Length: 237
Image (cartoon, rainbow, N blue to C red; front, side, top):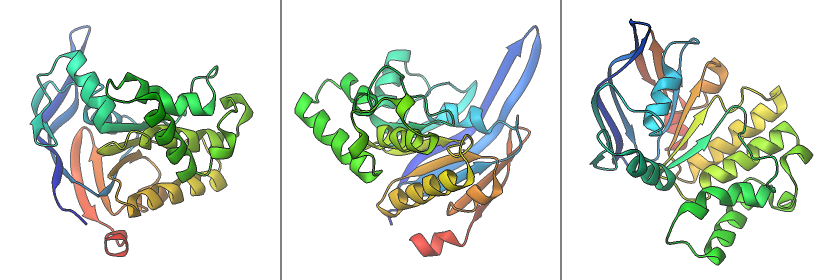
């Protein structure tokens, strides 16, 4: 497994201001993520883990500190520059699936790729087909989200995340809206993608899901309080 550093955060802080109240959502975060790692970020509700994931995904910016992605600082970029890098480098999986109801499965998975200037329609179609095959949903490509179960919708969301071959997959409580059986299926899918070389950073409050990663970062009150390797690291490496 490659040990190249994909992400490096130095002295990262995030402060929210509301009605003259300062909320320190993140304080002095030091974190490196290597290419090929499966990392979970865990902690209680309100601890700052979703804020951290938003910053990692370039959906939000830190108040202070350094964020280096693939060797390039991404802190002082414009919104348009962040959006372009996000589209190329990051695949998102959300708790609520975030599929567009009036688009088919195929169209949902293709949507992020349509914003890439250098991709032809044939290339998009090929990448979408490959992604849907990886999650066993190619047979549902012409269905709409309302025609799918929750587990199937999350599989489509995973396909959308991986279709563009991103540098990292960010999963925000990917099993939070699923029953036990479908949650297990999604975790197995993430483990499979990781074994094939994907870099995954998953936010979860579920200790059982966190243990499926090879590394667990624990956050409390906006600070990293633990960073440990699980038994999975030897099994997957």
